[in-house]
Amino acid sequence: MDISGSQKIAAPREKVFNSLLDLDVLKNSIPGCESATFIDTPAGREIKLVLTTSVPGFKGPFDIFVRTGEVVAPSRVVLITEPSSGLGSVNATCTIDLSDDPAGTNLNYSANAVMDGKIGAVPEIVLKPALKSGLDAFFKGFEKQVSGS
Image 1 (spheres, helix red, strand yellow):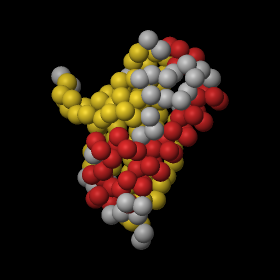
Image 2: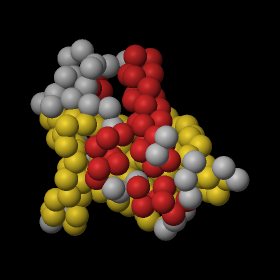
Image 3: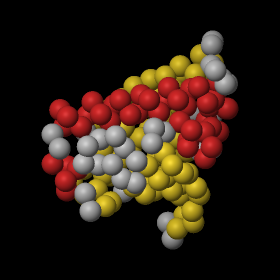
């Protein structure tokens, strides 16, 4: 499943870039996020998110582990998650590209997710709008956090 979108952010690109891995900003931007902490794993440092959702049958809470892939400051960051639970797994990659804009920063994202188990059995026509709505809510909340509006 592929999802993409964009968000204009009234803040300098470097501030936007740094905020993408700021735990307080993430916690306050992600819908249903109860906590965000850094943890050290054998694979390196990751962000552990504890989330609940409003999606029936998928309430949670769920532990989601996020690591960075490609990082090109202050233009691009790739976030990778491979959460797994009794409901199945979601292997997702989200590429976030930043560019200067006269009013601040243009943020463009492109996400790809592969799901299996109970999660994967949900038809894409039902799941994709819910995921797109969640991503849009995150980036709107992120914009408010970073721009201070």
